[in-house]
Length: 287
Image: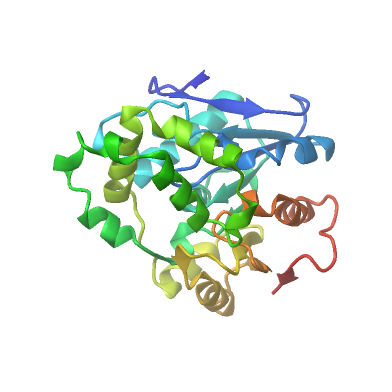
């Protein structure tokens, strides 16, 4: 565990040599460090220092009750503080879904210590399926009931939704996601994120104008069977047409958590973006 200046404690896992170039791995809504379990050894073997955290409200990290904790600005501040604490100068960042929005905002605000940003099915590139429904059925009054509703069956069904091929999920995977959800404050934190986080997608012209200020190309990895973040591919194409410095790679058959479902393919793309081993032929198409 590491403690930020705010006093919030985050679970952190890392591998590789402490002096190696850092690569920070950030998960999306409802996930945890477990999402990156297949990433540590390959990144360390390639000469990097991979680090992953449970964001506030997730996994074994603190789960504050204050609504403001789960707004975009607050979570951007969490990642910035972590970069300070771990001295992650020249970092690569791989951020999935909700964390893609957080990491991109941090870079667009001018964070100089992030050398390369790679996004996986970023929430800010798509329309979020079921997000409005989730808000509608989770008013503050249900806070006391929520922990009882997060059963193993419900967690398992939610996990299957983020894979293009749910048969890849094992019982062990289901257990690893279900276990931290049993903290009473977990469900309450997820509800706050649904209501407090910025889930809307900016208009193409506004996002493209911000992206054109980037000094390096942004890698965006999209699973072609993403059931949660819809229409990200045409949005990314429109951004590229507007001059945004994007490289878009589509992983055929991959779901919303394609970095967890197809780790070898996405790691190959990330290493290529970081100037290491090129991606294996035939595993993806890039545009």
